Amino acid sequence: MSTLKSDPVAILLAAGESTRMGKDKLLAMLGKKRVIEHALRGYRKATRVQDIILVVRPGATELYEPLRTPQLHIVENPDPSAGMITSIRAGLDCTWAAERNFLIAPADVPFVPPEIIDQIVTTFVTRDCKIVIPTYQGLGGHPGLFAKELSRDFHLRGDTNGAREILFRHQKDTVRLNVPEPDICFDIDRPEDLEHALDPGARWARVEELVEQKKKPRLR
Image 1 (cartoon, rainbow, N blue to C red):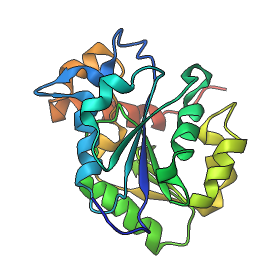
Image 2 (image 1 turned 60 degrees about the vertical axis):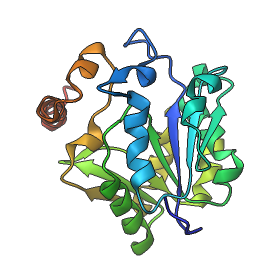
Image 3 (image 1 turned 90 degrees about the vertical axis):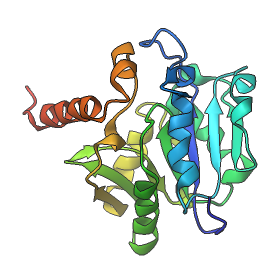
Image 4 (image 1 turned 30 degrees about the vertical axis):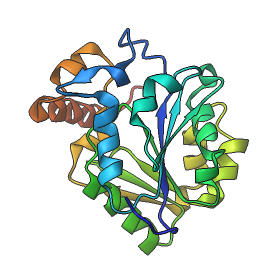
């Protein structure tokens, strides 16, 4: 975990209802660890992350309390039903995020390698940009990295289309970083995702399907 004050905090969004899973997917077992533990691993091992803020649903702090460390801070989103943007705002309102560049990712993307996270941060500090979005074969992935001055944008905008509104406003200041890592695009939404998540070939095949779908022309 980095000690450089210039490095970002990571905001992991864990306040969803897991409706497609039918249970709290982040606390589901994936091998010998829970999904959320797999997700946290990459950020904990990254050398260029300052702190981690885990945003959970109301009343869920106790469930995630065993994960807390001096670098992992747990905060509750009082109204996650209003959309993911409210979880981002809850994270940004934390003391640990004040005047810090920030990474944002859903907590159900469990296998982002620490090396990729560090590459995103390095790209951000060496390029003249406000946003870095990692991509795999043109498919946007996680985490995205945002300049600290964009915190205000997340508070003022996003009620309709979430983070897409901020990304649209700052297209000219965005670097899309192509990386050879399909796991930046693999999330766990359905029971079958959980069943196959520990098989790299199976989860990468799902990402390749998404890539092919993106290439197909849209019907007008």
